[in-house]
Image 1 (spheres, rainbow, N blue to C red):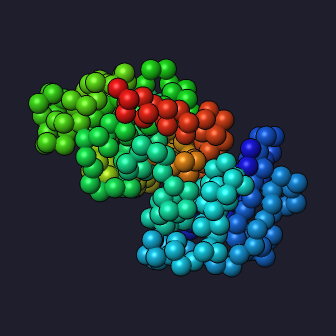
Image 2: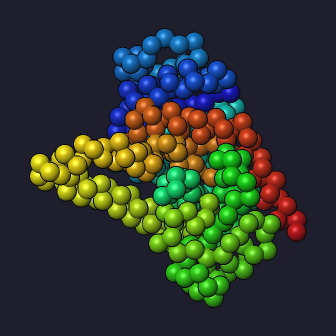
Image 3: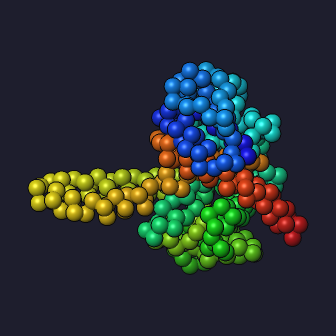
Length: 330
């Protein structure tokens, strides 16, 4: 299995990307990784390994670049070369922690969409209180969506949850302002009707307040709403941990209590750690494309590589394609 990785994308590139790749080839004997980026900078961290290859380029897409223009003009950028390797059949999947919009553009324009998928979806796995996690899609690939797009999101998410995350008959929920069938706007009402016609384990509408309780394994919504929910969850988690830290360091008594509670607090923080789940998958593209978090460390990159490996191994792309074809024929 061959994986293409943008070694120059993200806040901690290329060091943490290289460390994550080295960890992955040690853990998985069936993968070969090609790192695209500045060879001199990569070699500062990379210890020679026969299953890691470096393709040199000094062109990089920056976080401030306009996504589509950057992909079209910077043909030799590390991200574009990684996507091109997939398009050319030289790699089975690609990973980047770089510019999210540019990676989506590279996925669409370089690799291409699965036939029948009208809009791809950016899909992270978010933590739950019980530790199981849930898929949220879309979180920003498309601000607007039609009911049939949400139906396609649900199909892709369900396949991923079952084949990659190992969840049998995953529960699919439609994010809404209430659980009643008639709740919501025209989009959610029409999407509800469409989802009822599928063979998915559709459990109906779910509310945002119940997401972290694990109310569903897959939650679908439009990209505008999904992005706000994602950032609200991230911001709330960071704020809560800051408040707890402030409270536990405000006095000697609290510091002593913190020392006693440290193992439990560490466990709680790990349970809510996005890096355990890998990156956000760009679902609907002809091959697995994984967007790692911009601040990813080696652990997060390793998880993203593991995620891509399982997606390739489970043939998720072909399963999505066949499921969409069945719906079109019915």
